[in-house]
Image 1 (cartoon, one colour):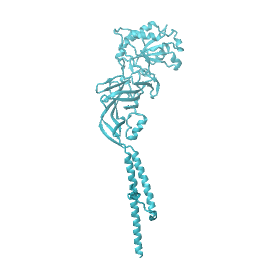
Image 2 (tube, one colour):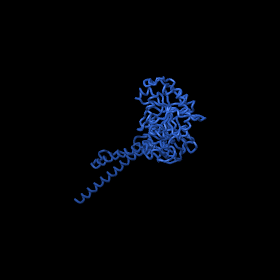
Image 3 (tube, helix red, strand yellow):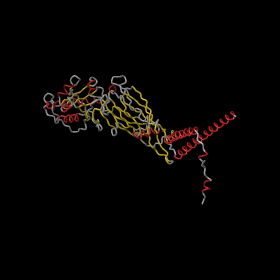
Image 4 (cartoon, rainbow, N blue to C red):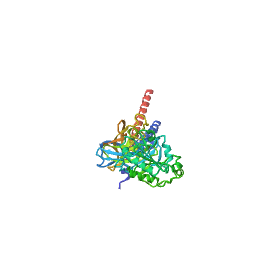
Length: 485
């Protein structure tokens, strides 16, 4: 066995008897300063160890071929009716999807962007296959010409008032005109306005009665509206509930539709002022008409990662639109790319990279609203978005672990005057490059090494300073003592 005397011979820290040491005020002061310096430097090293260290690089986008990009949006249009609002997607590869409804929802709003009811038109609008009679006949006007002067009186006089809002220049309006007048004539013969008075058909020329059509939120021609009186008098303070007709427009289909509207209405028209006995069964050919002229469109679409466009417009295969009456000014509540980041993930992103996360929803809160009648009220509004993907990874056990990814973009907007129907276009262009942010974790052994270096270094430097100071004082005392002798 090794003796204790041999073990003591390898002692690096040999002790000096306390009686042989001498304390001094300068040494005490220097010791306090050294201790404070150690604490301060230890705190700095600990803060540096706990801080996130990242490296940023630009690389080619690592997305796999065929990967889709999600676009979330929430847009409010104070002057575009939900009746015809359509969300379309196209790209440079030839993709062209029109009137997306599966992942898009619409809500009627007023001019102040306040919702006025539940979801508008949860299902797609039926496709009109017959736009008029195949054989046109010369029929005298059977429908009543309505204007702002007599519209209210007719709507209060008859239990059911069916109105064709049309424009003389509209192709579809001209296709409908013969069958509409013939239907009106047939209904007059079956339900005489003087003797029966249960239903009457009217028409409004929207080029002459602009304010009347605007008051009823007419944006596409022809628009057939069904005005009823009954429950609306009781529940809505006299305002008439009305619906839009989307069925076929030949005489046979129109007459059949009109018959369903009066099927359960008694001849005593005045009874309807207190009681509504009309048929409330679901008819796919008619839907509630918009209560207001605005629409909030929200939802998401998936697009390929190639340049393309998301277009919001007034669209219909059986209506015409007057460009001077279409206003697509809007407010952007949200327009973002990629998966939605939770607040926790967004905080994590900002913690790791403080300069990221600020432009993932660049257009949010932006307003592009122009009031009707202004010079720029009826123009196409285009947004040009350039998208850059940012991927955040961490190195754990020499392996790359993906934490999250986000898409940020720059936005530039412009107003385009055109003779066509105004639309809103969001042109997006994904960048072929991406930003790669890598978190570089620090080893605990490196932290301990630095702490030891701090303690040992400060202790050694303080000892050197104390020795210099002490020897200097001794030298000064010797010099002074020699002078005295």
